[in-house]
Image 1 (cartoon, each protein chain N blue to C red):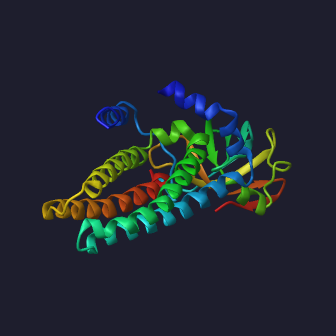
Image 2: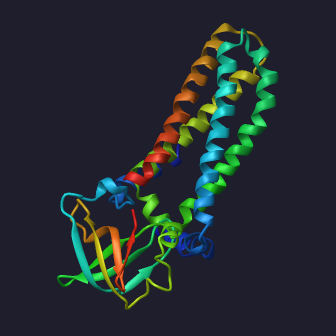
Image 3: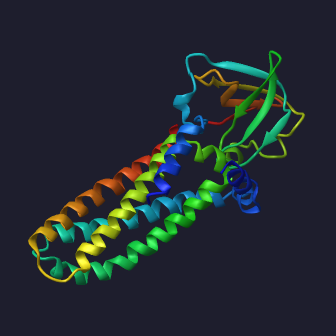
Amino acid sequence: MEAFLAATEASPFAATMRTSLFLYPVANVVHVLAALVFFASVAAMDVWVLRAATLAEARPMLWRVRPIAAAALVVQILSGIALFAPEATHIAHNPVFQVKLVLIVIALANVVVLEVLIRRPGTDPARRTQARSATAISLALWLCVAAAGRLIAYF
Amino acid sequence: MRIILPVILAFGVAVPAAAHHGWGSYNADTPMTIAGNIETLKLENPHGEMTVTHEGDPWVITLAPLTRMNTRGATADIVKVGEEVAAYGYPRRDGMKEMRAEWIEIGGQRFQLR
């Protein structure tokens, strides 16, 4: 792990991120903007599931918004790598960064749970309750991810 | 998921936290001035740093991000290895020999870095 982090930091890409005047601030801004788009689309989907009378009713809107969330997530990951690489060792040892990674893994697992609940045919009311809980968890988790992200600079 | 979580957690326990920090990690109640020649220098993002010997020990002096260094006039043709510098700032609260510079002075010119 340490060797991997050191190699990441020593890579030409990381060096470019450090020495370029604008790449780092641009990656920083892109990361924040993608976070806004991501959370906006996630919140739209979550609120839709919370308000829909049945899961079947929520599906068409979810399928429409989901590509936006997915695209924003990809931009987040790429800009995140760009911010991580120049200081890989430092950041990987940052306790808040580790918390953020764990939260992301849990939030993505929650996405899988929601996906399974929503895709399953039928109108079982218990499943709707489970899906509503998962969306509430989703809203809380992604906000915590954003908070942890912002706090990395202070630990 | 079952594998990633313990790996991340174990990693967190095994490695002591050595981090990157906001102004709050530095003690503004004990400002200090370090004067000497710039021994090593990195003008880079997310912030630059240089080392200067102070009372026999090499001190890391944390500078501003590249764009701010440039807008304040502290460019690479002024801030150079070997130059005589006076840096005023705040030492880390945890006792490590690192200072966050409020300003640096080179050749009679003062550059505010906050």
